[in-house]
Amino acid sequence: MRANGHLGVEAVHDALLRECGTDRSVRSIESQASRRHVSLRVQQVCPECGVVGVRLNRQSGLCPMCTEMMHLNEEIAFNETLQREREEKADEADVAQIRRERDRMRQRNSRLCRKFGLKSRRDRRGGK
Image (cartoon, rainbow, N blue to C red; front, side):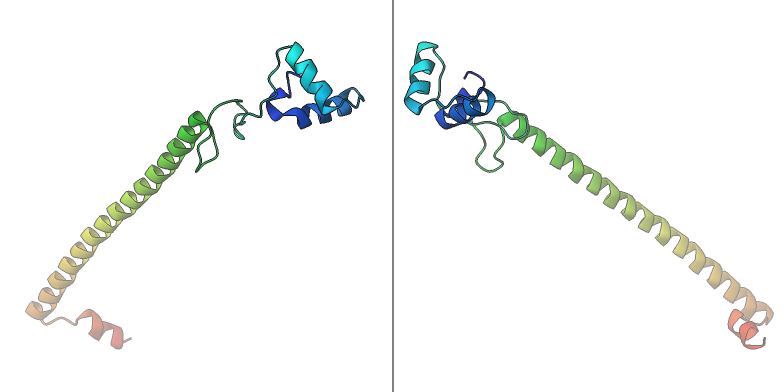
């Protein structure tokens, strides 16, 4: 009776029927609970951790501790996403630096070709 009291009279009735095979009336269960000082008041149970009698959050449906843990896990996941995006941005900076170096080398090669009258890359490709 104590194990299922927080679920209400009907749950205690069903548990007694299932475990002991006795079919007690609701009034009989209420009377025995009163004598043994067992509360049959229906109390909320956290679906995550199973704690009984705490106020559940309306939005998450969890107890305060589980709600805070859920929020913490969400923030950790968001932080990981931000770290990945930041690393991608860093890669873009590296690509831009490489692109500048390549452009500098192309211009240097172009100046050498003009200065000494050599064939450019385009002219060499067309000749093959």
